[in-house]
Image (cartoon, rainbow, N blue to C red):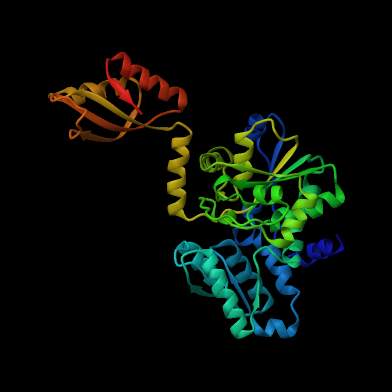
Length: 396
């Protein structure tokens, strides 16, 4: 805790003390007070600046002169770039070829030399390590280093200072640096408070690793939450999480996309999928977590194109879009009659497509694929009921 307190002083004037705000909507859903620790409003858009700055600030003059190198698809890249610039250290960041352009541009703006390499973060990490060996630059790991974890632990200190009545802290988790840091700070001062990690079910290495008692690598993993898409826990974070945290829960892709929608519509916050993971946990299992609950919104760096796709997915998961196939007679006026029924049901038609080539269709039959905008699950049921009452054969 002396190191964590020292990191807090070191970060004064560098990292923001991000706001804590209460959500009436999530409190109503969870049945207990819910507060949001808004690290999405941190400089560079995520908590990563904290650990990167503490790590680079701890380098010797000789190490600083050699420069630093990192690999990341976005958040860690920006954190290292800004931290290095503030400390007068040269930085090189390897990013995957498919890294979102806004994140690449932001990393360059913060002062790093960006090198695009590889199809994924793992390949970029390998290239960064090879660069470090060849040049003597210091490799700044995104989560598997004590200085990085110490920097992230300052989030836990702020949580306790801003919400002393907290009973549960939910933390989005990839490699485990933030979860480990928060657990160290919170458990040292308030061992009665539960600290729970949240992972995407499609990239959940921690539940398997905790069950095995050692870090386990996933063979396959993919999730929209790129900020926590890590195939293996870090060795150091795993030891901390295994001994201090109160478990790790998982959330689905549907829950993640719904949580982004809630963030925009009800919380008025732009949050990336990784940052929204704690919200997804609250939406998925209301009443599971003892309150007051603090959900750490770890980042807000989301590519606009991904935002568009995720919001469409979230709207569909929330019952705001409805896709149907309706069978009708292939004669003039049939489509107009169908659209009339939909209009009376107050459904907005987004797209219509005819399907005539299908061996299951009769000679005088046609099927129509419809994409509709609706007002929620109850309205979807009303629309389907109206169509069936009008005599149409409907499949979803």
